[in-house]
Image 1 (cartoon, helix red, strand yellow):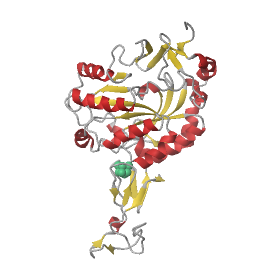
Image 2 (cartoon, helix red, strand yellow):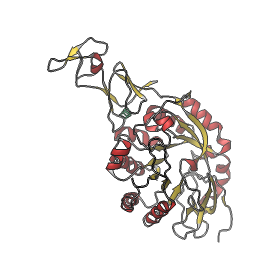
Image 3 (cartoon, protein in one colour):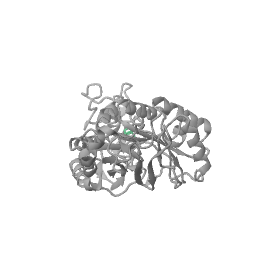
Image 4 (cartoon, protein in one colour):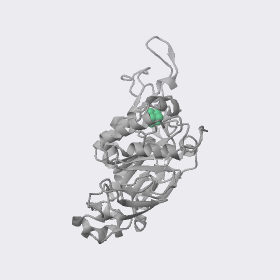
Length: 400
Ligand code: SF4
């Protein structure tokens, strides 16, 4: 448990002796509001959480919507700090991130809670319910990630549950990881206020942001949230220079119309046609019983998106080529993916970077702290949109 950042005492009912409600009535007896109405002490110790757009005003002894930020006596605490429900070494392709250290692994941590309430949540057992946790302080997480360097671990991913409501732990761990030469990855719903986001982004190298739909109505009805802050998160992360990939779960009849796909793709391509988009196949889960997304819907969405975006992938689909990366200049297959195993046979090191490979492949974690090599299409020589060392085998010779 740690005192949470981004909180302020409620000012609706300032307690006796308080200045504009700061520390309002902590431990004091029953007070009165401006109308002279009696105000219970618990009401006077409300805290306003400023971390995310839900803006919870939390009673003493209660949690916010995310269930992990709790008011104790007028102070907000991050109750999930250093508590992990899941700890695993994952392929980075599983996040999914396809353009960031392809073929590497990432030490993946998840906790509890979420600030949205999606009826179709695929991880609801940890986002919407309680689960057993293990303690892992930031320094321990970094040590554990560094120990995985022989298995091509390049950093830490904050994933599985919603990392933005794990904010203090993610910030502390990301700082320590960066100091140790590791990278940091967020897999997130993007639902956070601008201030805390801007404090966090300088420590984050790559994000996969789940844009669940492209209408405000969908977010309101199915997620108990709003679309606009999510789009702002993507836009700010791109602007700050993070590697950003976007996932969109296509749910039949809810967010899969050609018009909505067009709107999503138009917005994303406006940020850059090289931003990867993953259309993910929905399966019934949690409170949703709508049948799974038909393959035809996914194929149609991919065709639409390819008109404006260079890299469009299909997730939760085991079809040939659905997860392969193709050169937008000549169509050559740069990276093939079977499950989460990547092979980069269509890539070669750009000439100037060839000498760097020997060292970086052997010690991927160490390589994260260096200038990463650049890659190009082995067929046409176009620069490949890949950030970081390609750990998957690349073509080492054959340049024309
Ligand atoms: S949902 Fe959680 S993070 Fe968001 S405002 Fe409420 S308490 Fe804060």
